[in-house]
Picture 1 (tube, helix red, strand yellow):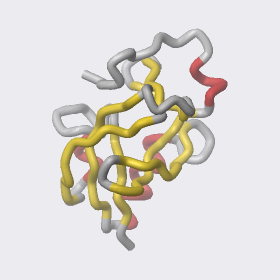
Picture 2: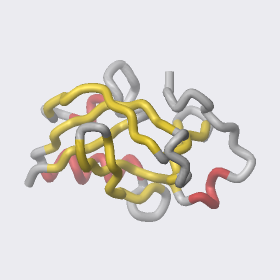
Picture 3: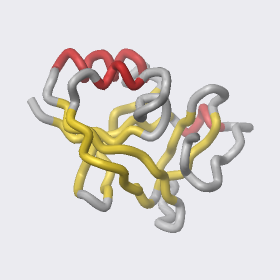
Length: 116
């Protein structure tokens, strides 16, 4: 099993849930066009916006452990809260977690697309 995962929030290096990435190989930073980021409180949520002017900044990882993928799915509440979805990055296809658009009602947009 090998998956390239795009992470944009608390799974990034230096954030609280990064430890769940385990021994996954860091492939670098990237932008994903066509996503819009919202603040969900202490973490972000993204949806597909359909507008390539919207971009989200995050990190790419090569995940080779089924256990790591299961931990990520558990953290993200896949498939009920977030759904693991393929996206096009500037480095090729990756999977990421997108929130159901119904959960962003009344949430503020993270206009620069970078969770800091």
